Image 1 (cartoon, rainbow, N blue to C red):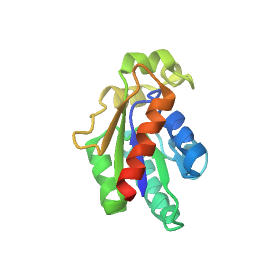
Image 2 (cartoon, helix red, strand yellow):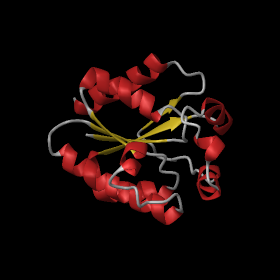
Image 3 (cartoon, rainbow, N blue to C red):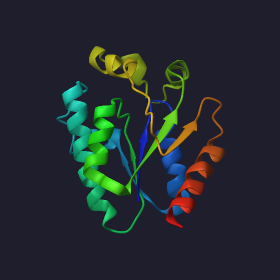
Image 4 (cartoon, one colour):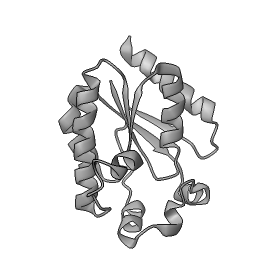
Length: 161
């Protein structure tokens, strides 16, 4: 199974994924990590983000063949991009919306992204289209990390049965 975490920067995607990894031994494909290497030529324009996501979906498919759970943590702000992911991954794609108010995300700003964000990235964040048909939505506004991790673990158990 491939769990695609979508949500604003600072919503808790990577934190929850890491908690799930500690329990399941899953593999995490993180947007920031891929941008440091294989996707370092992808900017934050809509085209650059879409290419970043397209490559990540293909890499997730390759890793999925190892019979491990793969969690992808990407903002994936547009429905068009999430549809692209579904088209590449197919039935093994499970869209998980990590939902958090933009003001809370900006307050958290663990990586200082909101402070140094280029205008084209900020426009993309401001235009985040919340998924209408996520397989699971986890609200992280009050931020109980263990509760959020347990929601994902429960989802994995239910979907694998």
